[in-house]
Image (cartoon, rainbow, N blue to C red):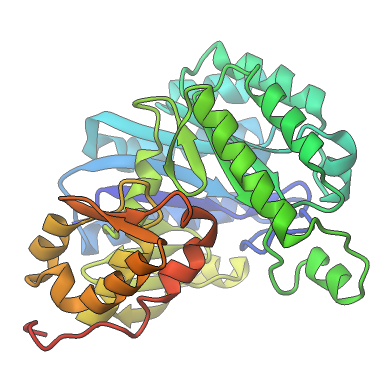
Length: 384
């Protein structure tokens, strides 16, 4: 039974050069019609797939804070009406925000609506770097907006990126020093990935993108990890660091391979053992009759087991031997013992009494460890 909810707001004031999420320019978009469709999907899905309790809500995008004050109030009312009656006492309710599209009024509206966590897309404090990646805010906006948000919220996260065009290790040092001056409790730090059909992918094909080399990128990653840990932001997942008790509970639902609702154009859900993908084009989503699902994928037991490994290993705690056996009725060693043995020999993963997890040296090579489990399940001992 799903206890986590993701709501997708696909509108942006500007499209960043690296972004491949389902999003569109805000101008001239049918935002109010979209919110109507979002509400309809929420109602129909909760009827079809009821839950007793919601533990986390995450509103992402796009840029949710690109909505105007009136639209933001509508969104908050929808959540209040349809989701908050199911909310647990310790609900984590997050909204993604852009540092230069958040008025004091929007902050007040979100606070009044029950939001208790904000996540700001900062990416870097280097104004030239922000311009190069197509961001419209500048470092001053970050300090001003986050300081204003901290008057209302005590659970604030920022996103930082490394491996950006022309970025240096010195700039990473500066980004981290400035980030640590902010009243924040959490940092997500991601490397640039060149996604197909983005501006950066096109520039790269033309040889016009000057990126740090792979070795420098690994140095950047290790510098982020060491610096944040030293300042009390504990790494609990490959790319995420939080003060104790401020880890993102919503994202841990994904990494633990648990079920969740996804509402909105192009959103994904995991319900009753099936992966569901919504219709992505906004006009088609708005016009859809019934639940606007485009694709339903029934997962084989072996696929669920593989996902358990490559999602769970993202967390520093790793994959629980006990949880795996409870979920699938077979021991982790019976299914993946041969893969685990090989990865232990390579020092990519290690065993504890209760878990398998990435080693410190395995963290920068995590994708190699994840890939090792795909197509490798042995089910002789499993009732599959």
